[in-house]
Length: 167
Image (spheres, rainbow, N blue to C red):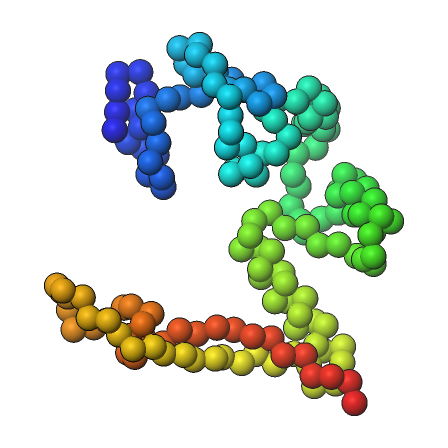
């Protein structure tokens, strides 16, 4: 989809979108490129639960951006050390782990489970569970190879981490 003002074809289509381009946000409101104001009921979908452009967040970002922007996690940095200390002081945890994405968080959880397992007898053991269900034939199947999770030829794998109890 394209129009004379905004080419949409360079952006991958992940969901149906109306041909509206937002250019400004404040609190619970958004404005499009023609100046029309909208009440944003979907702020939480893209992890924004603070409203659009809250002054306190914008000011803090501006101050921090003049000092340091996201250094590599291979190094320590003042803001992350300060946040980690505050989280430890106000929770039941001795340490915290920061991740930049869901994939990194999942990878970190697996590594932490393995590390925890090595501290105790037996270590962490990975096992694979395989399940299959009867296939429901489709009216027009293009190939004889079934990719349905219900097909006996399709095996669903799930990873479980087992931590042996201390004996």
